[in-house]
Image (cartoon, rainbow over all chains, first blue to last red; front, side, top):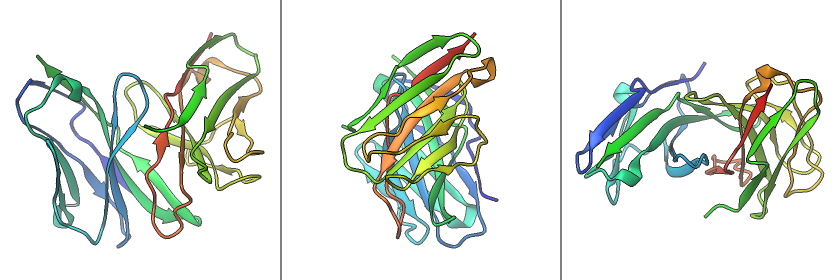
Length: 116
Length: 115
């Protein structure tokens, strides 16, 4: 069975600090995909990134960066120079091919509060 | 910006009532999903659809039902609401993603409270 663990339930940082959100996953499959979504207070989830299991290159997008390490089954997310607008719940998710299609399994989320 | 809409955004209703949560998308996506999310918790997939006339149950057992008569519309119905149904319901859509999973676009959610 697959599982996604986000050990940090809530994190508070002061604006301009860097913050890393941890994500650890479990699967026996060799082909899988990992996602990060952001859920602001308005409620809808916003897609941030998708990474497949064969691509271990780290990725940077503006202030966001992702560190994928298969050896430790982790896909951590770092926000550099955090801003108040980054305050949200962040979900890591694992996608596996099951019953004819890909399905997402979400972690419990990490609530990030950025204090001005 | 995602073009996926849910109505109502908030609903407070008494036990035993029949309710339908609406979800529509204008992106022409074949696949649509319903997730249930309790406050501070992860999302659980309760229904999904590959296209018109296709409906499948998700990982989390749910007393709700869905229908997919039109590509753009994926309503969720509870025949008799109970307090245990109190939760947030999120609708999402994506391209079919046979060879690899596509990003899902989410609606703003319906926060349901059953008294």
